[in-house]
Image (cartoon, rainbow, N blue to C red):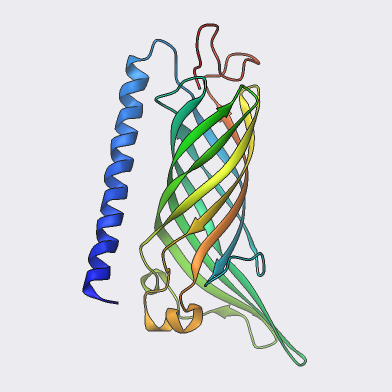
Length: 233
């Protein structure tokens, strides 16, 4: 990889971290100054993750989970900004059939995800989420099970890029103080760093479909988070 490419990747990562830090600070300031409590809470659910090279697909999906915190600011009845901090498991599951030999290999990754989403509210019933995300790799390992033996391969976190980034899109449906939603995370960064990882995964990137429930701590009864005077999403 060229020096110019490395510099550009560092610029993107640092910009993302600064942006997230600024948004989280703004959320804190807004919370302290607002007359009504802003929307803030916890969320979690299932991940259906995979790795792709050129075209995203649903083959070799690995089931995982995610959970974390979210908040909204600059909120109106039609729009808001929603940053989140989530722990998320990702990766892929590859099954190989060679004659009478069956072998399954699992690529297991754990990230801290920080999406920063524009929220477009469709009344009080639903909302559209879209925006970028940045992720920090916490842990990585590769395990195999099958006719050729069980165990872990010589992979660890150092074989993969510390950072990932991409795009997020989804929809949420509001049920009182609870939101039921679905999202898709499309990674833009090649995750393999070492020659060993590149041999196994090439230019693979992360992709994750998510189903989640979120709980608004500031919801009032069944009003979907709205006060009598204005939106408190």
